[in-house]
Each structure stands twice: as C-alpha cells, then as structure tokens.
Image (cartoon, rainbow, N blue to C red; front, side):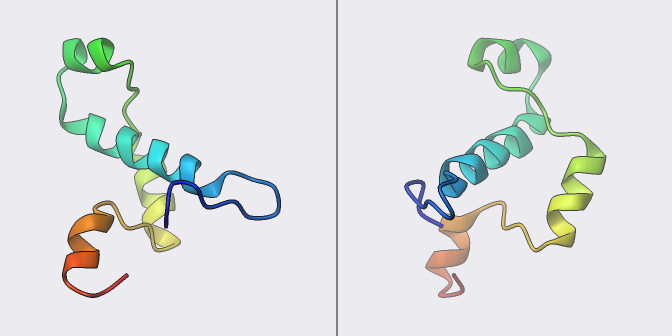
Length: 67
C-alpha cells in the first residue's frame, strides 16, 4: 500500500508505514529505538496485525510479484 493511500479520509498508508517501523524496531536495542524515536510493537500487536494479513516487508513481497 502506498504511503499516500487515504481511505475514508484516513491516512491508512502512513499509518501502516508507522506500524512497519514499529515492527522493525523490535530488533533494535533500546538505545537505537530511542535515537530513532521508534517504539517497538508488542507481541500482542504483532499477532493482531498478522491475523488481518499484515505484510511486514512490502518491498520484498512486491519484488516477488505478490502485492
């Protein structure tokens, strides 16, 4: 989903981009997260996002032809 995607007035693309950043922050140290101002996503949030089909690496998936 493009970052500029808006649906029913909501900036859904921007929101999803933020969630992907939070997902990636799980692998960073606390100091790195603080430097990047990125909060890590909880296990529960990951489970809920995956339950609705979240794709964490959209670029990789697009390269494989499955957008």
